[in-house]
Image 1 (spheres, one colour):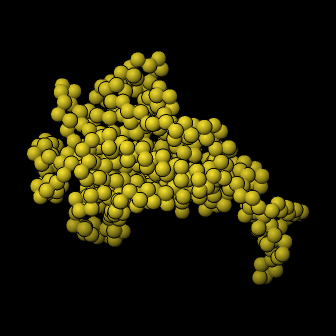
Image 2 (cartoon, one colour):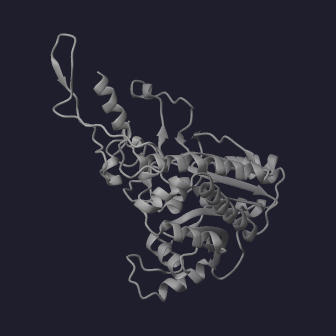
Image 3 (spheres, one colour):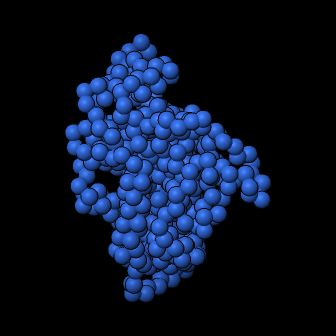
Length: 400
Protein backbone atom coordinates (compact mmCIF):
# COMPACT_ATOMS: atom_id res chain seq x y z
CA UNK A 1 0.00 0.00 0.00
CA UNK A 2 2.91 2.31 0.88
CA UNK A 3 4.42 1.66 -2.56
CA UNK A 4 1.13 2.54 -4.29
CA UNK A 5 1.01 5.87 -2.47
CA UNK A 6 4.56 6.68 -3.55
CA UNK A 7 3.68 5.85 -7.14
CA UNK A 8 0.56 8.04 -6.99
CA UNK A 9 2.63 10.99 -5.81
CA UNK A 10 5.08 10.42 -8.65
CA UNK A 11 2.30 10.20 -11.22
CA UNK A 12 0.88 13.50 -10.07
CA UNK A 13 4.20 15.11 -10.93
CA UNK A 14 4.14 13.67 -14.47
CA UNK A 15 4.26 16.32 -17.15
CA UNK A 16 4.32 17.02 -20.85
CA UNK A 17 6.97 19.71 -20.21
CA UNK A 18 9.41 20.56 -17.41
CA UNK A 19 7.81 22.21 -14.40
CA UNK A 20 8.44 25.94 -13.91
CA UNK A 21 8.37 25.64 -10.12
CA UNK A 22 11.54 24.76 -8.22
CA UNK A 23 10.78 21.56 -6.33
CA UNK A 24 13.00 18.89 -4.72
CA UNK A 25 13.83 16.10 -7.14
CA UNK A 26 12.11 12.76 -6.53
CA UNK A 27 12.39 9.37 -8.18
CA UNK A 28 10.43 6.17 -7.81
CA UNK A 29 11.09 2.80 -9.41
CA UNK A 30 8.47 0.06 -9.83
CA UNK A 31 9.29 -3.45 -10.96
CA UNK A 32 6.68 -5.94 -12.09
CA UNK A 33 2.97 -5.27 -12.36
CA UNK A 34 1.43 -3.06 -9.71
CA UNK A 35 -1.80 -4.48 -8.35
CA UNK A 36 -4.21 -4.50 -5.46
CA UNK A 37 -6.42 -7.16 -3.99
CA UNK A 38 -10.20 -6.96 -4.10
CA UNK A 39 -12.37 -7.89 -1.12
CA UNK A 40 -12.64 -11.50 -2.28
CA UNK A 41 -8.87 -11.85 -2.66
CA UNK A 42 -8.63 -11.46 -6.44
CA UNK A 43 -5.67 -9.47 -7.74
CA UNK A 44 -6.74 -6.43 -9.76
CA UNK A 45 -4.32 -4.85 -12.24
CA UNK A 46 -3.91 -1.07 -12.03
CA UNK A 47 -4.28 0.75 -15.37
CA UNK A 48 -1.26 2.80 -16.46
CA UNK A 49 -1.55 6.58 -16.24
CA UNK A 50 -1.91 7.85 -19.86
CA UNK A 51 0.56 10.71 -19.40
CA UNK A 52 4.09 9.31 -19.50
CA UNK A 53 6.74 10.59 -17.12
CA UNK A 54 9.36 12.80 -18.84
CA UNK A 55 7.60 12.44 -22.20
CA UNK A 56 6.58 15.69 -23.87
CA UNK A 57 3.13 14.83 -25.15
CA UNK A 58 1.60 16.94 -27.93
CA UNK A 59 -1.23 19.18 -26.77
CA UNK A 60 -3.49 17.39 -29.23
CA UNK A 61 -2.84 14.09 -27.44
CA UNK A 62 -3.61 15.62 -24.04
CA UNK A 63 -6.95 16.89 -25.39
CA UNK A 64 -8.22 13.31 -25.22
CA UNK A 65 -8.00 13.48 -21.43
CA UNK A 66 -9.76 16.66 -20.27
CA UNK A 67 -10.09 15.17 -16.78
CA UNK A 68 -6.34 14.48 -16.50
CA UNK A 69 -4.50 17.00 -18.68
CA UNK A 70 -4.76 19.74 -16.04
CA UNK A 71 -2.26 17.68 -13.99
CA UNK A 72 0.49 18.23 -16.55
CA UNK A 73 2.89 21.13 -16.12
CA UNK A 74 2.10 22.75 -19.45
CA UNK A 75 -1.68 22.85 -18.87
CA UNK A 76 -1.06 23.86 -15.28
CA UNK A 77 0.96 26.84 -16.49
CA UNK A 78 -1.64 27.80 -19.09
CA UNK A 79 -4.43 27.70 -16.52
CA UNK A 80 -2.46 29.72 -13.97
CA UNK A 81 -1.85 32.34 -16.66
CA UNK A 82 -5.57 32.24 -17.46
CA UNK A 83 -6.39 32.85 -13.80
CA UNK A 84 -3.90 35.71 -13.53
CA UNK A 85 -5.16 37.31 -16.76
CA UNK A 86 -8.74 37.11 -15.47
CA UNK A 87 -7.77 38.95 -12.29
CA UNK A 88 -5.75 41.51 -14.26
CA UNK A 89 -8.69 42.31 -16.55
CA UNK A 90 -10.99 42.86 -13.58
CA UNK A 91 -8.36 45.08 -11.95
CA UNK A 92 -7.93 47.12 -15.14
CA UNK A 93 -11.63 47.91 -15.35
CA UNK A 94 -11.99 48.55 -11.63
CA UNK A 95 -9.03 50.95 -11.62
CA UNK A 96 -10.53 52.71 -14.66
CA UNK A 97 -13.88 53.31 -12.93
CA UNK A 98 -15.98 50.67 -14.71
CA UNK A 99 -18.94 48.92 -13.07
CA UNK A 100 -19.03 45.13 -13.48
CA UNK A 101 -22.38 43.89 -14.82
CA UNK A 102 -23.53 40.27 -14.80
CA UNK A 103 -25.29 40.00 -18.15
CA UNK A 104 -27.68 37.05 -18.65
CA UNK A 105 -26.65 33.73 -20.15
CA UNK A 106 -30.22 33.01 -21.31
CA UNK A 107 -31.58 35.74 -23.58
CA UNK A 108 -34.34 36.44 -26.07
CA UNK A 109 -32.16 38.64 -28.31
CA UNK A 110 -29.59 37.37 -30.77
CA UNK A 111 -27.37 40.49 -30.96
CA UNK A 112 -28.23 40.56 -34.69
CA UNK A 113 -25.59 38.78 -36.68
CA UNK A 114 -23.15 37.92 -33.88
CA UNK A 115 -23.28 34.18 -34.64
CA UNK A 116 -25.38 31.02 -34.86
CA UNK A 117 -27.51 30.37 -31.78
CA UNK A 118 -28.14 27.55 -29.33
CA UNK A 119 -31.85 27.51 -28.51
CA UNK A 120 -32.79 26.72 -24.90
CA UNK A 121 -35.71 24.44 -24.10
CA UNK A 122 -36.60 22.43 -20.98
CA UNK A 123 -36.01 18.70 -21.21
CA UNK A 124 -39.72 18.16 -20.48
CA UNK A 125 -40.50 19.71 -23.88
CA UNK A 126 -39.77 16.31 -25.38
CA UNK A 127 -42.83 14.99 -23.54
CA UNK A 128 -45.05 18.09 -23.84
CA UNK A 129 -44.04 19.81 -27.08
CA UNK A 130 -46.75 22.47 -26.94
CA UNK A 131 -45.32 24.03 -23.76
CA UNK A 132 -42.91 26.96 -23.95
CA UNK A 133 -41.17 27.72 -20.67
CA UNK A 134 -40.55 31.43 -21.37
CA UNK A 135 -43.50 31.92 -23.77
CA UNK A 136 -40.99 33.10 -26.39
CA UNK A 137 -37.93 31.46 -28.00
CA UNK A 138 -34.78 31.96 -25.90
CA UNK A 139 -31.13 31.27 -26.60
CA UNK A 140 -27.73 30.99 -24.97
CA UNK A 141 -26.10 34.39 -25.28
CA UNK A 142 -23.75 35.20 -28.14
CA UNK A 143 -22.85 38.58 -26.63
CA UNK A 144 -23.66 40.70 -23.61
CA UNK A 145 -23.34 43.91 -25.62
CA UNK A 146 -26.99 44.93 -25.86
CA UNK A 147 -27.53 44.36 -22.16
CA UNK A 148 -24.42 46.43 -21.44
CA UNK A 149 -25.85 49.25 -23.55
CA UNK A 150 -28.88 49.28 -21.27
CA UNK A 151 -26.61 49.62 -18.25
CA UNK A 152 -24.32 52.23 -19.80
CA UNK A 153 -27.24 54.65 -19.68
CA UNK A 154 -27.08 54.44 -15.89
CA UNK A 155 -23.44 53.81 -14.99
CA UNK A 156 -21.46 55.51 -17.83
CA UNK A 157 -18.71 52.85 -17.97
CA UNK A 158 -19.62 49.16 -17.68
CA UNK A 159 -18.09 45.80 -18.51
CA UNK A 160 -18.91 42.12 -18.39
CA UNK A 161 -16.73 39.02 -18.49
CA UNK A 162 -18.42 35.69 -18.97
CA UNK A 163 -19.27 32.71 -21.18
CA UNK A 164 -20.79 33.12 -24.62
CA UNK A 165 -22.02 30.45 -27.01
CA UNK A 166 -22.04 30.13 -30.79
CA UNK A 167 -23.36 27.13 -32.71
CA UNK A 168 -20.91 27.42 -35.59
CA UNK A 169 -19.99 24.16 -37.29
CA UNK A 170 -16.28 24.90 -37.18
CA UNK A 171 -13.26 22.76 -36.30
CA UNK A 172 -10.81 25.63 -36.78
CA UNK A 173 -8.01 26.51 -34.37
CA UNK A 174 -9.77 29.82 -33.55
CA UNK A 175 -13.33 28.75 -32.74
CA UNK A 176 -15.15 27.19 -29.80
CA UNK A 177 -18.85 26.62 -29.14
CA UNK A 178 -18.38 27.98 -25.60
CA UNK A 179 -15.82 30.68 -24.87
CA UNK A 180 -15.34 33.73 -22.68
CA UNK A 181 -15.81 37.32 -23.78
CA UNK A 182 -14.63 40.57 -22.22
CA UNK A 183 -17.05 43.32 -23.26
CA UNK A 184 -17.26 47.00 -22.37
CA UNK A 185 -19.55 49.94 -23.10
CA UNK A 186 -18.55 53.56 -22.55
CA UNK A 187 -20.88 56.57 -22.56
CA UNK A 188 -19.85 60.06 -23.72
CA UNK A 189 -17.47 58.49 -26.23
CA UNK A 190 -17.35 60.39 -29.52
CA UNK A 191 -14.39 59.01 -31.48
CA UNK A 192 -12.97 55.65 -32.48
CA UNK A 193 -9.57 56.92 -31.35
CA UNK A 194 -10.76 57.11 -27.74
CA UNK A 195 -12.25 53.63 -28.00
CA UNK A 196 -9.07 52.18 -29.52
CA UNK A 197 -7.00 53.69 -26.71
CA UNK A 198 -9.02 51.75 -24.12
CA UNK A 199 -8.59 48.55 -26.15
CA UNK A 200 -4.83 49.00 -26.47
CA UNK A 201 -4.47 49.85 -22.78
CA UNK A 202 -6.43 46.74 -21.80
CA UNK A 203 -4.25 44.52 -23.99
CA UNK A 204 -0.95 45.91 -22.72
CA UNK A 205 -1.82 46.34 -19.05
CA UNK A 206 -3.13 42.79 -18.75
CA UNK A 207 -0.14 41.30 -20.57
CA UNK A 208 2.37 43.17 -18.42
CA UNK A 209 0.57 42.10 -15.24
CA UNK A 210 0.68 38.46 -16.34
CA UNK A 211 4.38 38.70 -17.22
CA UNK A 212 5.10 40.27 -13.84
CA UNK A 213 3.04 37.91 -11.68
CA UNK A 214 3.66 34.50 -13.26
CA UNK A 215 6.87 34.74 -15.29
CA UNK A 216 7.81 31.06 -14.89
CA UNK A 217 4.50 29.87 -16.34
CA UNK A 218 4.77 32.23 -19.32
CA UNK A 219 8.39 31.20 -19.80
CA UNK A 220 7.45 27.51 -19.93
CA UNK A 221 4.92 28.15 -22.71
CA UNK A 222 7.30 30.36 -24.65
CA UNK A 223 10.16 27.88 -24.33
CA UNK A 224 8.45 24.57 -25.02
CA UNK A 225 5.28 25.47 -26.93
CA UNK A 226 6.10 28.62 -28.89
CA UNK A 227 9.83 29.39 -29.25
CA UNK A 228 10.31 33.01 -30.26
CA UNK A 229 6.97 34.15 -28.79
CA UNK A 230 8.70 36.07 -25.98
CA UNK A 231 10.37 38.41 -28.50
CA UNK A 232 7.16 38.73 -30.53
CA UNK A 233 5.18 39.70 -27.42
CA UNK A 234 7.78 42.24 -26.30
CA UNK A 235 7.66 43.72 -29.81
CA UNK A 236 3.88 44.13 -29.51
CA UNK A 237 4.07 45.70 -26.06
CA UNK A 238 6.76 48.28 -26.80
CA UNK A 239 5.20 49.63 -30.03
CA UNK A 240 2.09 51.73 -30.50
CA UNK A 241 -0.62 49.82 -32.33
CA UNK A 242 -1.16 50.90 -35.93
CA UNK A 243 -4.38 52.15 -37.55
CA UNK A 244 -5.53 51.65 -41.15
CA UNK A 245 -8.94 51.96 -42.76
CA UNK A 246 -10.83 49.03 -44.25
CA UNK A 247 -10.38 50.64 -47.68
CA UNK A 248 -6.60 50.85 -47.17
CA UNK A 249 -6.57 47.23 -45.98
CA UNK A 250 -8.29 46.04 -49.15
CA UNK A 251 -5.81 47.95 -51.31
CA UNK A 252 -2.88 46.37 -49.43
CA UNK A 253 -4.36 42.92 -49.99
CA UNK A 254 -4.98 43.57 -53.69
CA UNK A 255 -1.35 44.53 -54.17
CA UNK A 256 -0.02 41.50 -52.28
CA UNK A 257 2.06 38.94 -54.15
CA UNK A 258 0.43 36.20 -52.08
CA UNK A 259 -2.43 34.21 -53.59
CA UNK A 260 -5.46 34.20 -51.28
CA UNK A 261 -8.17 31.57 -51.14
CA UNK A 262 -10.71 34.40 -50.90
CA UNK A 263 -10.13 37.22 -53.36
CA UNK A 264 -10.01 40.56 -51.51
CA UNK A 265 -12.47 43.16 -52.75
CA UNK A 266 -14.20 46.20 -51.32
CA UNK A 267 -17.49 45.22 -49.67
CA UNK A 268 -16.37 41.68 -48.76
CA UNK A 269 -15.47 40.63 -45.24
CA UNK A 270 -11.84 40.07 -44.28
CA UNK A 271 -10.95 36.41 -43.75
CA UNK A 272 -8.32 34.96 -41.42
CA UNK A 273 -5.75 34.73 -44.22
CA UNK A 274 -6.29 38.44 -44.96
CA UNK A 275 -6.03 39.41 -41.29
CA UNK A 276 -2.76 37.55 -40.77
CA UNK A 277 -1.26 39.03 -43.94
CA UNK A 278 -2.16 42.57 -42.86
CA UNK A 279 -0.46 42.07 -39.49
CA UNK A 280 2.71 40.78 -41.17
CA UNK A 281 2.58 43.66 -43.65
CA UNK A 282 2.49 46.05 -40.69
CA UNK A 283 5.63 44.54 -39.12
CA UNK A 284 3.94 42.08 -36.75
CA UNK A 285 2.51 44.94 -34.73
CA UNK A 286 -1.19 44.78 -33.79
CA UNK A 287 -3.22 46.86 -36.21
CA UNK A 288 -6.66 48.47 -35.92
CA UNK A 289 -8.79 48.29 -39.07
CA UNK A 290 -11.52 50.95 -38.99
CA UNK A 291 -14.55 52.16 -40.96
CA UNK A 292 -16.07 49.01 -42.46
CA UNK A 293 -18.82 48.96 -45.13
CA UNK A 294 -22.25 49.52 -43.62
CA UNK A 295 -23.63 46.39 -45.31
CA UNK A 296 -21.13 44.16 -43.45
CA UNK A 297 -22.00 45.29 -39.94
CA UNK A 298 -24.98 45.04 -37.53
CA UNK A 299 -27.65 47.71 -37.24
CA UNK A 300 -26.34 49.30 -34.04
CA UNK A 301 -23.06 50.64 -35.49
CA UNK A 302 -22.89 54.39 -36.12
CA UNK A 303 -23.36 55.57 -39.68
CA UNK A 304 -20.39 57.63 -40.92
CA UNK A 305 -22.61 59.34 -43.51
CA UNK A 306 -19.84 59.13 -46.07
CA UNK A 307 -20.37 58.47 -49.73
CA UNK A 308 -20.29 56.92 -52.17
CA UNK A 309 -18.68 54.09 -50.15
CA UNK A 310 -21.05 53.96 -47.21
CA UNK A 311 -19.24 52.99 -43.98
CA UNK A 312 -19.85 52.70 -40.24
CA UNK A 313 -17.59 53.63 -37.31
CA UNK A 314 -16.46 50.06 -36.64
CA UNK A 315 -13.05 48.78 -35.56
CA UNK A 316 -11.34 45.38 -35.39
CA UNK A 317 -7.97 44.79 -33.76
CA UNK A 318 -5.81 42.25 -35.62
CA UNK A 319 -2.90 40.63 -33.78
CA UNK A 320 0.00 38.34 -34.83
CA UNK A 321 -0.72 34.63 -34.97
CA UNK A 322 -4.44 34.98 -34.28
CA UNK A 323 -6.02 37.59 -36.55
CA UNK A 324 -9.07 39.35 -35.14
CA UNK A 325 -8.92 39.74 -31.35
CA UNK A 326 -11.15 42.76 -30.59
CA UNK A 327 -14.23 44.01 -32.36
CA UNK A 328 -16.00 47.25 -31.52
CA UNK A 329 -17.74 50.38 -32.76
CA UNK A 330 -19.37 53.62 -31.93
CA UNK A 331 -23.07 52.91 -31.41
CA UNK A 332 -25.80 54.67 -33.35
CA UNK A 333 -27.20 57.05 -30.73
CA UNK A 334 -29.33 59.12 -33.18
CA UNK A 335 -32.94 57.98 -32.91
CA UNK A 336 -34.05 58.63 -36.50
CA UNK A 337 -30.98 56.95 -38.06
CA UNK A 338 -31.53 53.87 -35.93
CA UNK A 339 -35.27 53.84 -36.56
CA UNK A 340 -34.79 53.96 -40.34
CA UNK A 341 -32.20 51.21 -40.33
CA UNK A 342 -34.32 48.88 -38.19
CA UNK A 343 -37.29 49.52 -40.48
CA UNK A 344 -35.23 48.60 -43.57
CA UNK A 345 -34.18 45.36 -41.89
CA UNK A 346 -37.68 44.54 -40.64
CA UNK A 347 -36.53 44.57 -37.01
CA UNK A 348 -38.50 47.49 -35.57
CA UNK A 349 -40.88 45.39 -33.49
CA UNK A 350 -38.19 43.10 -32.09
CA UNK A 351 -35.96 46.00 -31.06
CA UNK A 352 -38.53 48.51 -29.87
CA UNK A 353 -36.89 48.41 -26.44
CA UNK A 354 -33.57 49.34 -28.07
CA UNK A 355 -35.19 52.36 -29.72
CA UNK A 356 -36.53 53.34 -26.29
CA UNK A 357 -32.95 53.74 -25.07
CA UNK A 358 -32.66 56.59 -27.60
CA UNK A 359 -36.19 57.89 -27.32
CA UNK A 360 -35.90 58.53 -23.58
CA UNK A 361 -32.45 60.09 -23.64
CA UNK A 362 -29.12 58.93 -25.00
CA UNK A 363 -25.55 60.16 -25.44
CA UNK A 364 -22.75 59.28 -27.85
CA UNK A 365 -21.29 55.96 -26.76
CA UNK A 366 -19.33 52.97 -27.97
CA UNK A 367 -17.97 49.62 -26.92
CA UNK A 368 -15.99 46.53 -27.80
CA UNK A 369 -15.61 42.82 -27.16
CA UNK A 370 -12.45 40.73 -26.80
CA UNK A 371 -12.28 36.96 -27.08
CA UNK A 372 -10.47 35.89 -23.92
CA UNK A 373 -9.17 32.58 -25.27
CA UNK A 374 -7.77 34.28 -28.37
CA UNK A 375 -6.04 36.76 -26.08
CA UNK A 376 -4.36 33.90 -24.24
CA UNK A 377 -3.34 32.39 -27.58
CA UNK A 378 -1.78 35.70 -28.53
CA UNK A 379 0.33 36.23 -25.41
CA UNK A 380 1.36 32.59 -24.95
CA UNK A 381 1.77 31.66 -28.63
CA UNK A 382 -0.48 28.60 -28.37
CA UNK A 383 -1.72 27.62 -31.81
CA UNK A 384 -5.04 25.95 -30.96
CA UNK A 385 -7.75 27.68 -28.95
CA UNK A 386 -8.82 24.33 -27.46
CA UNK A 387 -5.62 24.30 -25.39
CA UNK A 388 -6.21 27.53 -23.45
CA UNK A 389 -9.57 26.64 -21.86
CA UNK A 390 -10.08 23.98 -19.16
CA UNK A 391 -12.89 22.07 -20.89
CA UNK A 392 -13.18 22.88 -24.61
CA UNK A 393 -16.59 22.56 -26.29
CA UNK A 394 -16.70 22.46 -30.07
CA UNK A 395 -18.68 20.76 -32.79
CA UNK A 396 -18.95 16.98 -32.23
CA UNK A 397 -17.14 17.22 -28.88
CA UNK A 398 -18.40 17.89 -25.37
CA UNK A 399 -16.30 15.66 -23.09
CA UNK A 400 -17.32 15.76 -19.40
